[in-house]
Length: 172
Image (cartoon, rainbow, N blue to C red; front, side):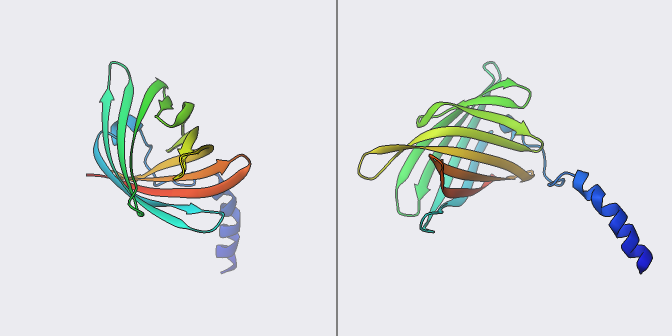
């Protein structure tokens, strides 16, 4: 028993060098997001704990000539609101892209971070009263198997973290 504990103590530091999500596949945007996908998830407010569900149907196409992934997203929120957004991700190098969307201010920075694809961008949000405010998104997309990507995002307004998004995206 003492030998087993000693062996465990000696090998434990090696776990620090192992990838945190070794089972995850390396996500390649232009491969995974081609075709029709569905997503289910929610936005959870860190201010009052309120949760807003959402379902999304996505249709993606890759233009090899322009190195651009176009991803049309049709949202249906749990309160009945509907919205459509179109991402355009232009590949700028191995594992790097710039992204644009109707509500994104400037360009989204998109990069490969091991098996994860990260996005950082500022988006203009509309209120039900018609006014707008700008929030910053930090997204992480992690492919867990051939047909599933988990998208988590933290939403910031100025220096305040206002909420979290979690979506499970499935290939049909």
